[in-house]
Amino acid sequence: MIIKCQFKPVLIALGAVGLIATSPMAVASERESLEQLRTTTLSLIELLVQEGVLSKAKAEVLVKQAESVKVKVRTADASSANDATQSIEDDEKVVRVQYVPEFVKNQMREEIKQEVMAKAQSEGWAYPGSIPEWLNRIAWEGNLRLRYELDSFPTGNAPAVFFRGDVTRNANITNTTENRNRFRVRAQLGANLTLTDWLTGGIRMTTGKIDDPVSPNQTLQTADSKYSFALDRAYLKAQPYSWMSVVGGRFENPWFSTDMVWDPDLAFDGIAATFKPKFTNEWSAFGTVGAFPIEEIQKSETNSTRDKWMFGAQAGLEWKSAGNTTAKFGVALYDYKNIEGTPNTLLEPDKFDGTVPAFRQKGNSTFDIDAATGTPGCGFGTANNRCGLASKFRELNLTGQLDLAAFNPVHVILSGDYVRNIGFDRNEILQRTGIAYAKENEGYQVKLTVGMPQTLKRNDWQVFGAYKRLEADAVLDAFTDSDFHLGGTDTKGWIVGASYGVDKNTWVTARWFSADQITGLPLATDVLLVDLNAKF
Image 1 (cartoon, rainbow, N blue to C red):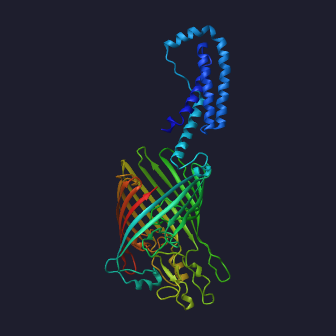
Image 2 (image 1 turned 120 degrees about the vertical axis):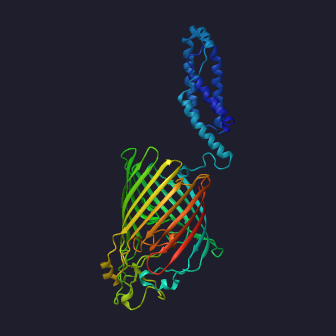
């Protein structure tokens, strides 16, 4: 180690000063040796300062200590002359263990830190005094995922053209019969910032389409000469207490939830406050409230559309046993404002164009907001895709999870999710759109996982299976899982998969999704995903 060569003189010097400091009652016969050692120590200190190994400020502290020791030694010589012989005889009979003063210990700790810096310099990745202090407050992280995707369409599906002509369930579906193979990549690079003891932050870049909030995947093809790389995290997080935090900006999902309501890759814009009071070692609670702008719209004399928001609140309980078995349950309400479509009129044909969703997948009930103008604006063959959402959305969501750790490290995890859109009102929809829609506003999912909770180490494994049913207007189709049924609502089916740890922070995951459309035209979609994941 470097400490044996470069810092050996430092430790000798510190040890010598400590030896002098603890020998004020040394006998006269030892004085000459101690004086020589003190002189040598001072010379070593001076040499280390000249070589840049020891700072001048630290050297001055050591020199002052040595000078004070010199006075003590002289005083001790006069008072201990009569007992010198007896002291020598006693010393020959015992083993002397030298006490190291606290200031020497502190100096040794500091020098060990300097030794690490010296090693960094010798290896070429850092130089003493050249690293800005703010760099110590940044921690980098990232991940890379390579994916093979097979989109398979069983026989019996309706042709895609029929879906595009359905005004009440406009889905923008372009393929229902031809299988598709794709190789895709996801790359993410972020920085976690420690600004103060109570304030942190984060910035992250990711691949994916700029106008797609739920998929960071980039399809591999030489035709795309450059991949898109955009900001999907930019936030500050304050934690004034251990049980409370407030985050603002663009950040990760703050809710206890599954992919039935929120896609795992979805980022949230806005502000959220989370509370986690702890009652006992076993029982704790959690709660989150937040406000999230969905789409900001500039109003004018010709545009009466209002800003779209989502306000959410969640509360729940968590229990944890001494054996790490946990149970967690939460209830949440997600209330969307101004998300539903509003019909244009003949006198003001463009006044509510902004009520059309900026992004959709498929499944939600829709209507033509231009129906009263005499010019179709929604459906197949129209110049503008002006389809508004038929229903309002106020989602009541119940989520639970039981994690049995009795066979640790193997866990048995059972999770369940239920959602109901209590904002669905057939009479209100009929009055606003002129269309009577069926009440399809519920969804649920159950999932069983066996294995390690995460497969981040070599030979970690996990298998899982799930069943999902998500009716057309149960949740906003824009934000639900983008893989099951290739995204959206009005679907039901099975999910099976497995994950295996290849090495540290490297694992392979395979998943099979088999889903069918619940109502409307027949549409079955099977999706196979095989992922190689790596993170740092």
